[in-house]
Image (tube, rainbow, N blue to C red; front, side, top):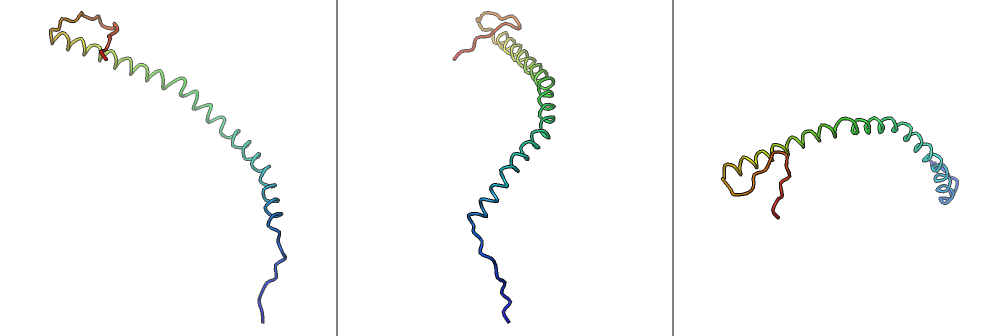
Length: 96
């Protein structure tokens, strides 16, 4: 007793063509779905980044620069160097 199953001959070229033909509209539908699903999230993250984070970061960085300038002034005063005195907030030229 032979339990073999007879398969109809399958043309792989046609099978691949049908599968790829079905995937083209599916890629389009998945792309549209992802765009509409992700758009509110991207907009919310953009507004958060635009409004909140940079202002705080800028404030922190400006405070750190001011503290560094004050430290340079203190070090120069303690060293007693003959370099011209700097006013707080003025620009300091760095040697290269």
